[in-house]
Image (cartoon, rainbow, N blue to C red; front, side, top):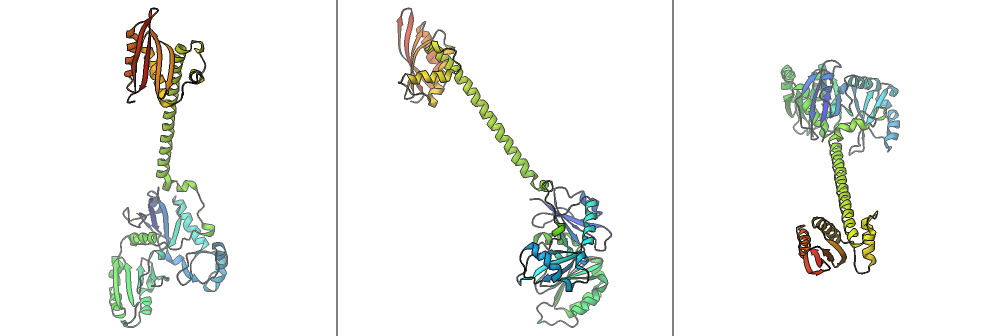
Length: 415
């Protein structure tokens, strides 16, 4: 299955991006890297592209809109959420996810202009994502635990119920004080804190951590490197959030864009098709060779047995017609066809042999022959036996009018 390149755009709108390639299970298949978007484009070939936008530019809400149908929901959603938004809904872009167990519809809201600018930056770098998420969607909720993700310029807080909020890094101490104002109550089921941060941020906030240990039921700090792109990428692959590329930003279907993911299968299918055509062509060639061989054999037997029919345009058809017209034989089985070819080859190898009559019945061919000498008939018999498929037996060989008239019986070996 194709890999996915996950790119994390900088939270402050400037600086380097971070990226990593992951497989379908979210496991990294490359080392995390940071740098300009153009460098990420160099490793994007043959990969699906997912982009994480700074969480601060994407507002996450929930709606109890009872409508069904994607189009109807998107049309009504701006008016249903208008009271919760500080901006004019006409300049905003709305995207939805799947309803949760409470029937609430998760919604992501971003300024159209801002989203368009991000996509333009990516396009300039020759990057064309099919998935665009808020970075907060890649921070998975933990039961009974407040998850705090700290990067260079913002704090992302994910609650146990999946809701998230974003604040400036300068507000970290204030937010923690508001969230945990008093010493921990051991009866509080969700009074636990899990913090993800860099080693530098950890060292800078040691005093705050000590204070939180006294106010939270538990405090766990996990260090991340390379802006945590490895963890974020694995999380968004295993549990995707709301893809912002909906509505007017939907990715247009382009068969060429899917080529990298289907290329190997297409190559195998093409190879199988070519093999089939080659096989059919080889089989047709063999059939044509067999047909030509059969016509040659029929012409040889026909000219000897029915001299008046020599030179017929369709020797095999002429031979079938004359033999079946006698009313004494049945023609058309594979033994007769193969035997006919063997007989013709044996006649070519045996000089002076002339076929007076041919009778085929129950898989056995009886021949009446004329030959200059018995040795000619015996050479004819031996040539048939040398075929490996048929055996010939001389039934009689009598001298008459300076020629030897003989009878030879031909049948498939083993009969």
